[in-house]
View 1: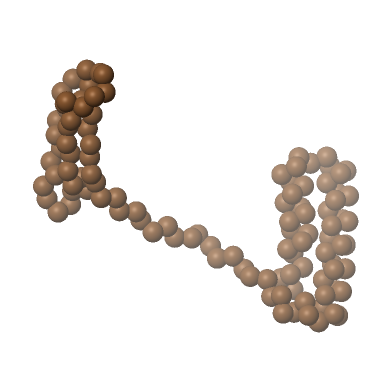
View 2: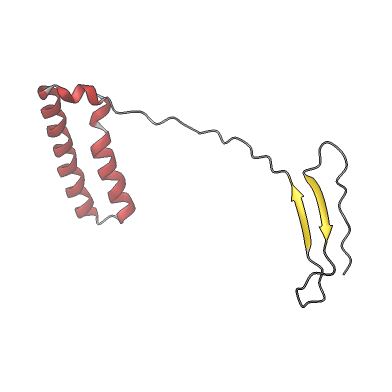
Length: 106
């Protein structure tokens, strides 16, 4: 099998050099190739920003108690609904998640 040596000339090439080592001790009919190349990674963009929780509001005991009460009510309602409907674990997790994160937006 013949391997065509890629062109390493030009500014746009990512390959910097390619070398074949026909005399290497690998006990095989194949010749190992060593290539040096430049890898350019693209910066990934996040699709959405995560809302941060305002923890400063929890220092007020009145707001903290109100939030606890709302979360407990939501959990009791959603857990009883999920047990009655016998939903799968993924749906149950989504209900618990909305129960915990729902009241924080108020």
